Image (cartoon, rainbow, N blue to C red; front, side, top):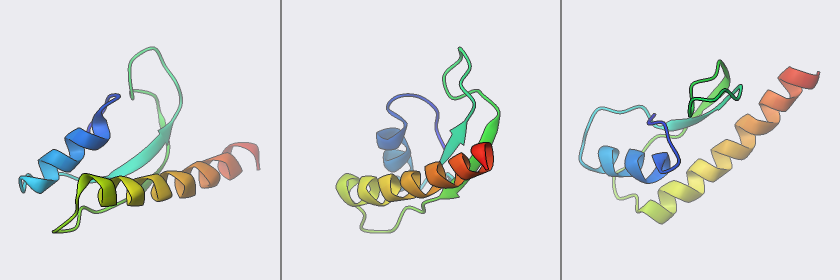
Amino acid sequence: MLPGKDSLAGTFEAAARGEPIVTGCMIHHVVPEVDAGTVIDTEPCPYRPGDTLDTFSARMHAAERTVLLRALVTLVG
């Protein structure tokens, strides 16, 4: 998983080139450094051959909703 505001596009491009990269999303505590806080939870979202940026993004956003709800339950009980 790549950090930063354009991480989804960068992750897609790296996976499409065949680079060995773990694809998914994470929820973490907010700190001044981008994507550097302690991880609360993660959800894999594998790149699939034939993915377009749109199909990959749609699956990633669905995974984000899943992990966000799970993290909220973890944090607030």
